[in-house]
Image (cartoon, rainbow, N blue to C red):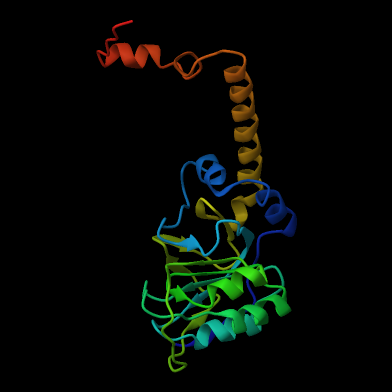
Length: 224
């Protein structure tokens, strides 16, 4: 049944801000290699970065009426996340709706269909992640839902979960886990910073990653 839900629990703003400090890959690794959306979903410009609570949308392919409703009802700081059947041959979002998003303070748009007017969107500065770039227009016919669980990029995204996107990809963090994942992400970055310093001091990857017993067990030989 078509239904608009706008009231749902969102991740705390301070937890969203904490997660925004880390890259998508770091967060993915820190939460046990979970939450990565399909690598087919890419930013229209590699400089784009977003982080915010998901305002989820279930939409029909080649139809953007639910996306337009989401722009109307989403809150400032939300990331609109649209599941539309992985339909590549439609441009459901462009610069006009991009301006509408900016006027509302929406943090970005993620969709598993196509977008268009990409040069204008890049100049606008709104982060947009999509499955494709396509000039073909859409209709406004079929109602769907907002504020419910969706599947996008092979992952479950719930309303209010945190979506973090950058040049490397997209990752979802459960809203109730956001603070803990931010803490683990910082711990991971601290460890990696120490490794980098040790590499600079002359230590080797075989030494620091303890690869010697692994390579010996696998029978690796060298001619050194």
